[in-house]
Image (cartoon, rainbow, N blue to C red; front, top):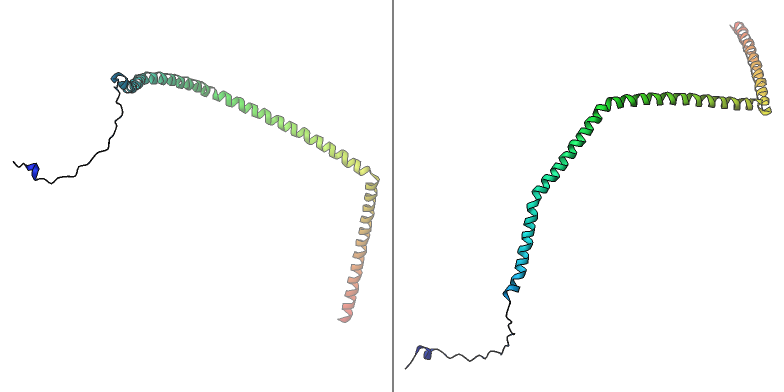
Length: 168
């Protein structure tokens, strides 16, 4: 009897290597589930904490709003006292300006007295007195020279006129 398999070509026999499989331990399913349950527990913890966020945000908003109101009330009080503060500043500025003027006048007087004292000391020195005397003598000589020059100019003018009248 012939079968279909008899008509198929024969394949060479392939020998597979002997592979030893590791010993498979029995897995405890309860222990295998623990990491997954821990991850779910973390997510649940975060969800629980996120549920508290709106209430905490409302508390924080209330605190901020109270602080803003307190600050606004304080600023309003400050603005009400501002005209008085400006008047006080103006009066203080006027007082400081008047004091500065008084101080400047006093300093000016002290500096003038100091300068006068120094000039007096310099004038009384023998070298200064000699220089003044020489200056006065130089002035007298200059005045005499000017007078001589005027006289010479007049006589030269008369001589030129006389010469011009003879020539012409």
